[in-house]
Image (cartoon, rainbow over all chains, first blue to last red; front, top):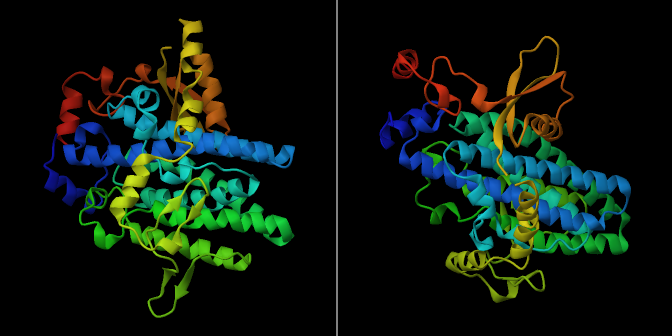
Length: 311
Length: 82
């Protein structure tokens, strides 16, 4: 290990690019491993979530585009797991030997996508969140192999977002039942994505990811970035979202108690019950959502069978 | 099911150099070619190659993912002189 923690933090802040695990300090390695695990698990768990929803595709062409997105997500997961493997962390163990609740994807990918509107809003909201997070990492990360790998990922996530936004526009313009079901998807997925960005900055005292320059923006900055695209989009489409731009603070402000509790069985946020603590949010996340075990199982179910044929 | 790592190199145009664009895990060379072509389909590549990572011979570094076969003073010197 050629650097102390403080030396490496100072170097990366001045633009030094880490190229190999041998150059990492323990702190850097730990922070990067957590970031890559969240990234890999999120991409991986989006695949079964989108795959089950793709059954609701309204035509052959929409089936093709939905499955193209799923293929991309699996490739993105593979890239992040490969980077972990190059750090000596086993992909086999991460994908096949953890309990479902040990995966580190966001709570949104533990929820069922029950119809075509849910899928396209997931593309419009969740993939937009992915772009906000990963394009920031792409611009700022001090880890060279990740910076290069994200060229492909960013390009493809932009296609997913376009797919989501084009279809949201189409459903909104159709009006009637199409717009109603779209609004229902927006109602549960907007607060879900706002929560995805995690603890507010005033509650997060210490960020290894910022100190080691593994990302550039804070949680609140990323949340604002997401809302700055998503809120105007929804307003243009005539969709209600519980947030607005506040002229005085020049920022987006939420119109509901944040954070708040979620009824997963009803797919409904309990605004009327008021604000809860972040401790309660973490407890809900750790308990995982209704599709957690089903999604993990769907990724792994054929592994043992095919291996037994081949060996 | 034993898989090996393959690095994927490609270029979009005739005049460009081959560039490292990613990696796949595969049980043999034939599957590595298929996986690379289907996985890295974000561009209309002019040329794509896969190289089994264990076949890459590093010249001047003894760290990083290609360093398993690195030996000798040249590599150590290069790293120390970074």
